[in-house]
Image 1 (cartoon, one colour):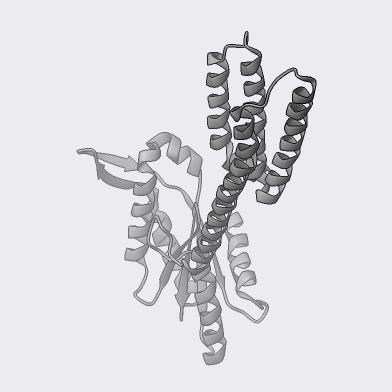
Image 2 (tube, rainbow, N blue to C red):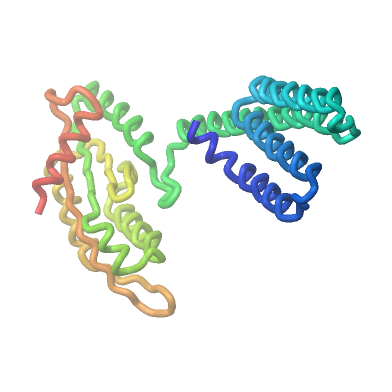
Length: 280
């Protein structure tokens, strides 16, 4: 329910603003104006009920208001206090009509939002590339890792994964600024592509974590890749805004090779992540 209130907050605010303007222009010395402003207030509430809760609830609420109002007008007519005027019919017609229209609009908006969320979720399920770097994302990493693990076991060959975690990420943004956010990852991506072979694959699996999948590579071979990564990222010169800028990026690297104790791709990644904690 809280989400619905947020979605229609603009509509509520706009209608409330209209109410304030109408109230400020009304001449409350006239009894007619007082009654009209009260009815306008109830019309606003009825419209909100229809938008937030649907046509049926809105129509029921508006019918209750109309019955009370019609009984009041009829009672005044019976006592001769007031006569029935065309404006009375306008109010009686306006309540159910606007409640129906507002409820229809509210339900249409809700239906559009539900479809949007549905297609957005479907898109998230299908997307396998990291938007910032163009590398594979975590979804693609797990998919490919599962396949490579199966091939490695079937053909009795080595496979190693490398987890690279960028340290002091918030501090990097503070030092180089948010404008350097994309450049930092462009540099890291470029270096990783230079270090790895054609058959190796690179992924960005979280905001500050990269992963390498090295098929047919024993742990000793991955150690060479690890040293190259740390040496290459320790000091980087980039050209930006017509000047050279030196960047110092510290990373921790964890390695893990497939063995019989590893049952799933998630255990495989977890093993490499534990090695990240011990890297200095």
